[in-house]
Length: 351
Image (cartoon, rainbow, N blue to C red; front, side, top):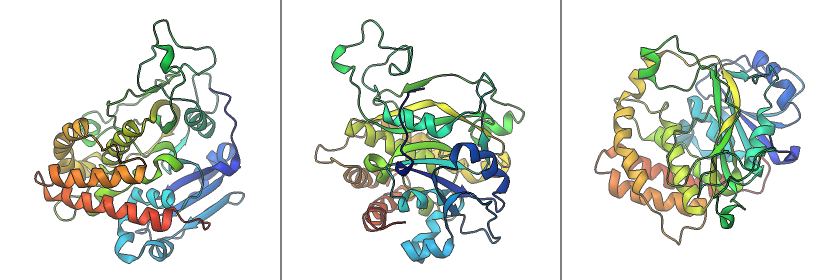
């Protein structure tokens, strides 16, 4: 791990609260996150009161708070695990680390507790190398370097915008795989971080991620939430769509995306059959989406994440809107998100 220093005032921990009793969850995380400011967003559909132990510097946002900030017509976007996006919106910190309440701290191969915050911040504060792959993975890690043949002109790297952590025990598998392999568990701890190459897409899971809010914050959004009314829901595909969008944005802006450490221990993933019912139409349509994101290019005039999202929304409507009207609605939701970010997320006032 890099020796990147952590300024407590630069970090927000965003927690999507789906379960009302957070006592056990937060107490397990206490050694790692108690020094940081927490943004806990309660699922608007939850009726019970949240139970939060003492000793945390936390701001809790409820359905009433969400409605007050964004209006009742928009607040529906933030139901379920998509409530995490409201935390991204109201944060005022440079770095956001997002942890779901079905995860606990993992232990590495030596049995030591994995410091998710330290590793994510190390990933974000050290350069990324998307334009030429280093076979020793992270060249900025202690004991590693650039291998023979790596171009010296590319060794300074670029800013890392997004850090995608992984999971022990229950990997973030799709519903068909869960249904076919219900006993499968991930027990392999790979002690590595790598930069995802430019133009390569990846499935981003919101379960364990961190990002530089100042450079890519507007590109993490819940656009599919309003796009799937009727015969199916999209909550299990939300972060997949978002991840492809943010990767295209990072590639265009010359930013890096890293994956690997840190790990969390994931202990719950819901019912595979129910998840399959929710996501099957989305899984099929994603086969149309991947070629689009592989080929889409943003104009040179798009120089910020906001610019990129607006431009991409236009192209989504033009090219994918004719595949399914849901994508036209997703396009509108992306454009609306940028307006919301500028009016709420970019505010200088405290959350």
